[in-house]
Structure formats: structure tokens, C-alpha cells
Length: 559
Image (cartoon, rainbow, N blue to C red; front, side, top):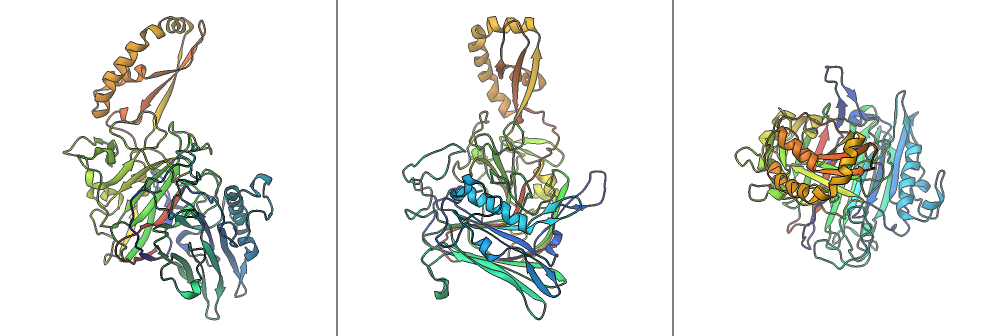
């Protein structure tokens, strides 16, 4: 969930408050709404919240000295006017080498695997069982954007990359720049007046003492507050970059309670007891932005994360073939559209209207260029339409695909912002977002596979003639592929394209043969049905880049 940029050595601060969003699903037949999260509206007095720290490639790498694995939780119920905490601080401090129930031998001294299993363990302590399902916690996610290319820590599109010389694309002050932060937990307490308050805070500067102030160092803080029996939890976030740590990311996430969430290649624990499926789910929230953070800070009204392979199959943890898919609405009005008629590489191959009509990016009269900040393709895609650009290969444990959109009239039917500045400073709004409808029509790369069975006699013909005709097939394939990718020429040419793009799965003379034919998504007919897609994580938050002037952003989010 990142984009590589050159950053200047200044710092700025972001502060925001959140009263978490209510996710719900609806039936196409008009049946009642059903909440998809364990704590809709964040109104439950007994809070469930956790913390996770990531390095640039969404792993741990190494733990901060004396802090333990960067996973922690604050979970409690209320009984007789007192808080019954589920997670002791000794468990929050657990780190490599320390055992806990369920820890596997292979994870005991591996920082990456240890964090995975610690999250599952904390989830078991925080678990809320319901009649039909269970759930665990909201997740505060903090990510360090530094990348030491000489460390060899980050794979390239899931493949081991090894160290390589610095290129200037990634910030890093030298050895140790990808460290995890010092993390401090203020366990939630209940006052005599019925007020509950808790939080996490810390810094990436490992030698810093927060008691001396935060000038010149990075800093993050998340505080949650609520009055017993009244309203919802309010989360206040603050993150400050520094010269050594100029790129930090902070999100409040609703992750899957099981399976693979966006950006993960392992089992997670979270708040989504049922995965939202496009097109039938919505998000309702009230957002008030009080201050912004400059042109290089990206603030996401919503960030949807999911995972499926390029052939449409669900992810299974194989980082070579899994692909993380992100769609993000950026509401900072200083973020401009990189997609344009003269920069098609930053545009998705086509746009799909609410009426399910395709508009190709070379249709300069109709394509909504201003609606797209940036698009990039997964690095493990084999049949990309040109021109194409692939996403950063290092900032996820597997290949990723990114669709970043901006306020534009084309999104009006989904309830999203329609012009720059809506929902930003001085414009508080209540949003009811048809996230399912929108996400079902956003372009994502996918290759359709069709299995075709041929009888033995045709199998023998292919066996005898395929090699002789292969150069001719390849020539025709190249000749017609380019125009097909620019414009639809009807079913006949699409049929020819499909059969000239055949790859042999197995060819046995005298027996039935199975051929696997691929049809890229952009070869479908112009009138296309919306996609049904499962979303594995929903984030609200920001990516903070260093700017020349300090900036503060405050926002509140509620039902």
C-alpha cells in the first residue's frame, strides 16, 4: 500500500480522531441490513483493540530492544463498575525466544513468524463468541516507510531479491533504518466518573526518551475514550515524522477474523466476522477534517484491501502467485491526477460506469481521467495491456495492484465525493458510501481461464502440426492483439484472439487433450456485469510523507 517518492528531510505531524465506521451488508432483494463487524458503530463498552507494527515489506525483520514482538492488545469487559482485562501486559511484551500457548517451534526464534502467531494468540484472548460467528479486535496499524536496499529483507513480487545498491527511490539513513518502534501501552482505565481511556504511543528513534519531549524525533500516539453506556468510542491519532523517519503510515483497520487480509500472506485476526462481498455492502460514517498535512500526504476516506490470484482464485499464502489488491479514495485536495490523456500508463485500461459500460483510456472524449490519481499493475502479471506500469515490487510480501481514485462526478452514484475539497477542511459530512457497488466496477487485472476438451482425432492432428504452424500462430496473435486492446472489434476477433492465445496444458497423442485458453479481462464485451469480490480489510488512515512545512490534520469519524 505504498508508492515510491523522493522525500525531503523535513518533518510534519498528523493528528486525527476517529469514531469508527459502521459496515453493513444488504441483499439485492431488499432484505434488512446486516452488520459485518463485531462492534458496529464502536458502541460496545467492552473494547477490543490491537496494535501491529510493519516494516516496509509488511514484515517485522527484527524487534525493538526490550519491547518484544510488535503486536499488542487492549481488550476488556466491564463488570461491577470495573474493567476486566483479557490481556496481561506480560503477554503484550512477549518476544522471540519466549513461549506462549500454541507457539510452533519454527516461530520461536523467527521474528516474522513469531508476530504472526502472537497475533493469533492475542486474538484468542480477546475473542468474542457469537451464535453465528466470532470476532477479535479493531487493529491500529503503523508502518515504517524506510527501505534499506542493502539488507535483503524485502522480496521482489514475492521472490527472494537479495541486497542491491541504494537507488535514491527509498528513504533510509543507513543500517537499522527499517527498525520497529519503541511501543508503550497505557492500559485502559475507568475513572470514578465513568470515563474510560487508554492508548498506545511511541517513537522510531530507539534512543529517545519521550519524557524529554518529541522535538526532532518521530512520534505516534493513539488514544481511545468513551463514557460508560454513552455514545461510541472516539479514537485520537497523532503521528509525527522526523529526518530519519520521513515516511510513516497509520491506519485503523477492520481485518478478517480468519484467512488472508489485505497485505498479509498469513492468517489474521480482526473485526470482520463476515467478509464484505461486492456489490452488496455499504459504509456509513461522518467525517470532519480540521487540518491537512500538505501535498505529499495521502489521506484515505476508505482503503479497501483484498487478495486473489491473477486467474481469479482466492489467495492461499503462496507469495509467488497471490496478489494484494488495493482501492483507495484520496480526499486530500492537493493530491492531483497523474492519469491523463498524455500519461495513459497511470490510468487503468478502462473505466466501468454504474450502468456497466466500459470506457477505454484512449477514449479522450469520455474517459474520466481526473477521477484517477494513479493505477499500477501487479508485477507477476503476464498479459498486460500496453502501456503498462507495475506497482512497487518491494512494499508487500507478494505482488500488489493499486487503484487510487480522487473525488469526481463519476463517483456520485456511489455516494463518494464528487469534487476536490468535499469532505475536507471546513466541510464536515455524513457519508453513506456504496463501497460494494464501486469496488465491483473498478478495474483489476485478471485473466480468465477456460478449459476445453478435444477428442482424440483432433489431439493427433495437433500433435503432428502444432510445431509447424506455431510461428504462424504467434505472428497472427501479435498482429491482432494490439488493436483488440485498444478497441472492441466484436466477438469474431475475440474468438480468434482466444484460440490463438492457447497454451498447452498437456498433449498426448491418441488421447483426449486439455487446452487452457486465456482471455484477458479487457477482452470482454463492452457491456459487462459487475464483479463479485470479497474484501478482506477496510482501512481509514493516511500515508505521511515529509513536506517542507509542518502540517497537522485532525478528523473525526462516526455513524
